Image 1: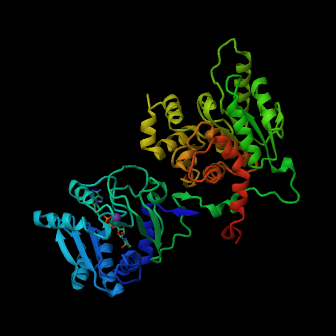
Image 2: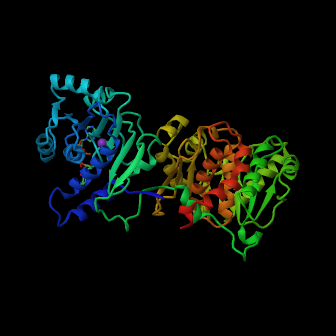
Image 3: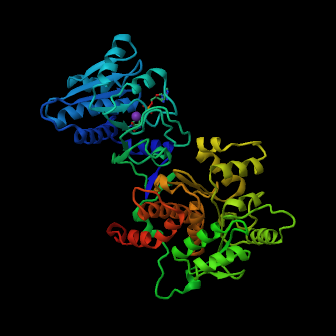
Length: 507
Ligand SMILES: NC(=O)C1=CN([C@@H]2O[C@H](COP(=O)(O)OP(=O)(O)OC[C@H]3O[C@@H](n4cnc5c(N)ncnc54)[C@H](O)[C@@H]3O)[C@@H](O)[C@H]2O)[C@@H](O)CC1
Ligand SMILES: [K+]
């Protein structure tokens, strides 16, 4: 699992670690680690002298970059062209002195000749170090810096120092502006932007150990990795039977929507639910009977519910079967069992589930979340899908707060936000190929998450693990090509087996 700590917690850990150490010890450790990464990225061609350019801001992030240039000169031993471009009126004094000492060429881009020289040199660079802003940064860049970033050579290898400049280190305010790095070298531990930010903003992430102790500090954000499946997946033991493994009830679909329940039930069965009970009218029941002979039918004892895939929340008054299905959905929502609330059932929620908020996992996409918040938030009249997509963590948090439950917001990156006050971190998963964005894919995710809730996982683990496995299964089902929702569901057993068998996971 990748843990990411808030900027405040990292700064506090830096303060603790710095006590009793020489003034610039942490920066030297950071710069040395950074230089080692950059040294490994230099082009190997013996006929050309590599050109490394650092964009340098006025704070300590710039100090890291300047010291790294100095360390790089010592580390590589071969001739190198090293250039520092100063982007503001100040630069880290000791860093600048160390860089000058080893012969780094310095240009001050706040002057016209300096800017012209910087533009030319950035267009030729082999490696660019982005040392403009680190954890002192915020979303967006001043015009001068943005213009310099735009002139970086297309084929240059861009290494962000700690955080890509222009990105919000807290990961909450997304912006496309600023540096998009091929890789990011961070210090002490990941920050939320590395986990929550747009998936390819930071590139490959390397953490340099500078001696911070964050073990006892609760992370602000997390990402599950493939090896985490073995820790969290409910693997049955010899004493288990279908009941102890978890019985999932599914209230989904209606006479006009028969596909969603079939996909949802298939996914839950393929994911290894002990038993799946489908509740619905004759049409979808017949289809589920045909496609999933393992499922049982009609209401009965269950350990968790999935409510909502393909559910029409507002059938016509003459549609008796539709009204019965909504009544079944309401019974599940009014109870106190763990529940995945998906699609149509989201429209049935007006506030928190009374006794079961903490056991509830909402699984909206951006449009559904916008509609839900517009309806239940007294401070919001009309929220759009675009607004949710622009600030996904903010709005998922808002829904989690209003409904006192866990919210899984589906998208290219899937965010799983626990209820406020739970002390739990936000999780973000970006495991799925874009091919997975296809009709029925969400019904599969709901069934999979439901199977995990029924097995006893809490909503944060169930939601994030479901997002991980769903994404990996979508890849496994047809690497590099299109995939239908049913194929994702049918791939689940093999994907789970493969991830359980990973040698790292078994340790
Ligand atoms: N504190 C420590 O002990 C260590 C800090 N280190 C480095 O220090 C960095 C943090 O340094 P600083 O706190 O000096 O902050 P930064 O160097 O990240 O930023 C400096 C200043 O730039 C301004 N600024 C930031 N974003 C801006 C924007 N978008 N537009 C305009 N102005 C902006 C702000 O006034 C900010 O204080 C870390 O990211 C890391 O690189 C490392 O050397 C490791 C040790
Ligand atoms: K940076």
